Image (cartoon, rainbow, N blue to C red):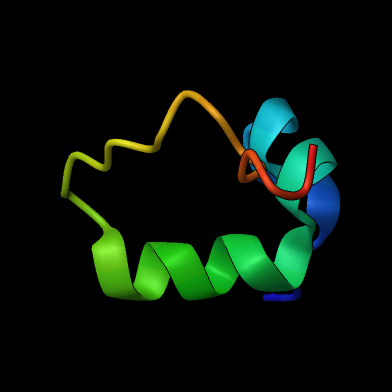
Amino acid sequence: MKIVKSNFKEIYAEILGEEIVRIVHKYYKGQQINLPMKLYSNEYV
């Protein structure tokens, strides 16, 4: 069975892309992941 972008929940595929969604799912499926509120460092901004 070929997996295509439309098989993923829409938001994940749009934001991350198919390849990254597969990698994240492989290593973190079933886990709760907390991400920082700010994406960029103060030096970058």
